[in-house]
Length: 72
Image 1 (tube, one colour):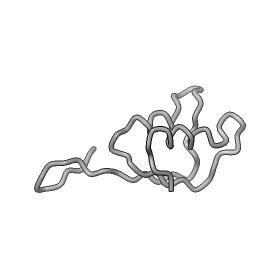
Image 2 (cartoon, rainbow, N blue to C red):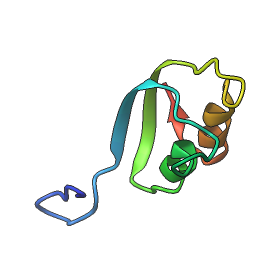
Image 3 (cartoon, rainbow, N blue to C red):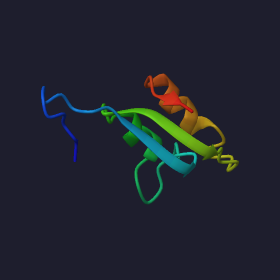
């Protein structure tokens, strides 16, 4: 749910905090990095650990950067 300000009803931009790099590949579910990149309300994403799995290994970060998300 998007939280709106009381005065102007403009959606608040969101920050996302994750412990592990969002996946860039599809398996049983869709790519999390792709889903996050398509969410216009999320502007910044804070990631603790880069995934060292060879299927990912920074590819999720690349998807987010290409979408204009600020990785922190």
